[in-house]
Image (cartoon, rainbow, N blue to C red):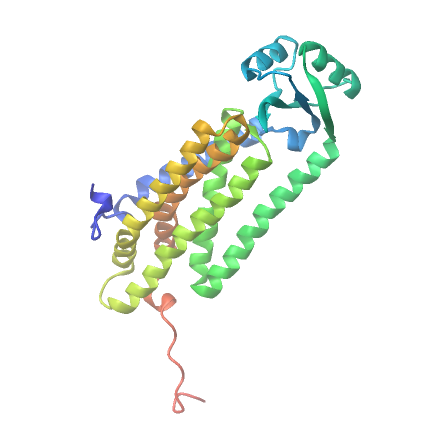
Length: 305
C-alpha cells in the first residue's frame, strides 16, 4: 500500500478546501446535535444505585437483563465481576423511587440472588464529576497550547488547539446523535484521545521545523506536504496497531468497556485525520512561514544600538 512507503508524495494540501469543508460541516452538525440532544449521561454522572449480587451457580447475564427490562429497568447495566456467579447491576435514579424499595424490587425480580453490597451515587456527586471532567479537558487544551507556543510558534499552538477540539467534538457528536451512554470511562478515553492526537501533531510539526532548516528553497506548502509524507507511515502504523487493541477491547471487553473502547476507536480515526488534514493545513492557511519556525539570529556587536 502507498501509505506504508517511506517516501510517499501525496499532495495533502491540494485537497484542503474539500477536507476543510467536510470538517467544518461535521463540526457544525456535531455541535447542533450536542445542543439539541445533549449527552446520555451514565450512572457516574446522573446518580443511581449499584448492587453487587451473588448466585449459587453461574448465571447468564442475558436472562438477568431480560428480567430487568420486563420490569421497567431498561437502562440497567448488568455485568460480571470476579466470577460468573457474581453480578454487578447499575440502576439509574428514577423519579419518585425510594432506594430501599428499588433494591427490594430488583431482588424480587431476580430469584436466587443474594445482595452482597449496595452503593448509592447521589446526583450531586454526579454533577461534580461532570464539571471536573469538563474542567480537565479545558485545562489540558490550554496547557497544550502554552507548551506548543513555547516549543514551536503561536500559530501552531492555535492549530493544535483546533485539532484537539476537533476530535472530542466529533466524538461527543456521535455519542449525542446515537444517544450512547457517556460515563467516566468514556471521559477517561476522551482525555487519552487528546494526548494521542497531540502526539501525532507534534511529530509532524517537529519534522516541519527540521525541513525548514534543510530545504531553503521550498515553499511552506511544500515543506508541510513533505513533512506529512515523511511521517505518514509512522502515523498509519501506530494508528493501525492502536486500533487493533481497542477493537479487541470493544469486541471482547464486555459492556463495561464499550464506552471506553468506542471512544478510543473514534479518537484514533479522528486523531489520525486531524493530524494529517487539520493541523498542518490550518497552519499554512494562517500564514506559517520559514521565519516563524527558524531561530532568529543573535544580534552582533555592530547591530546593537
